[in-house]
Length: 387
Image (cartoon, rainbow, N blue to C red; front, side, top):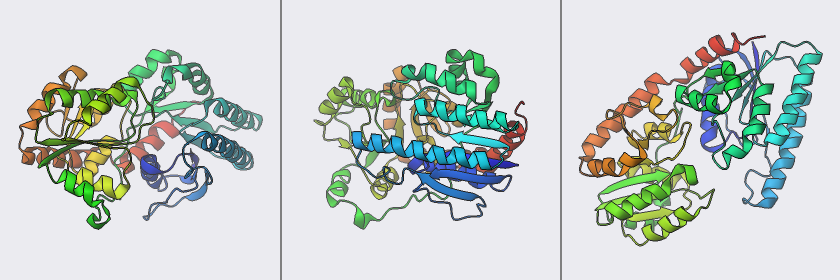
């Protein structure tokens, strides 16, 4: 079976997903991967043809209008190359992992479909919809997504809960859905070099014996303002330090107010950007990872927590609970229960949290291996797609 796998993002945390899945797929199919120019192929037995094309210029540009325009131009040129490549080569499956510019993506998909129809090709188009709707202003994309889902043959979602949400918006495409779970990260570096960390930061966190951390991009659905308000209400006199390490990708009023209030507390540390080495240090010293989400389909934070053997406190959103066992390797609560659960955790012994984190590591790596996921994907999805 010949498979073409397309992932324009392919770096940072999204790169871990592609590394895991493509490495596992490479032992099962004849695989070609076209991805980000800065994608790093895993140093293991991955045996596939790699083409690194997307975003050579724009990937490391400062995020502004110029970067967005450059990125769009690069996206168009790379997809033109991909369409030419598809026109010259036969594949059984074209698997797309991330569509980034829906207006252009619809045109690209229509062109690919015309090529396949013209040569009477039975190739199927599989699309991994990591989120039912985009995180920011997602409802504005519903009609574009409806056109995309009409053009693809299979829509991959990462959990049954996500499927339920998907069907609410797109009931006409329920028959196209295939559930493929997210796999555990592979070969992740969880270590850090203490000599490369800002000494002022080390001094600041050393004032506290306990640390809880929120990390990742910050926008409305991630609910950081909810967490900060809870902290200012109930934990401002606590000897536990709350660390927020993430870049704001969407500004909103309640977050700005919560951050202004939180910065008045000595036990809150807000960092707008940290390098990987520093983030590894902060996660390592933390006893709890907090995910106060308003909405989510799934979150890679769960897998990072497993990498570091740290337990999580998360709101019950999307398919997150399908990967966790409440009160065994994690804490799963409603938004209204978040504050009380934090109070209960705050009086727990760190050793108990360490044991839960160890169980999360074991559970994730045993239940969600990429090999098992890839075998299921090939046998139940690729081979069983309808003509």
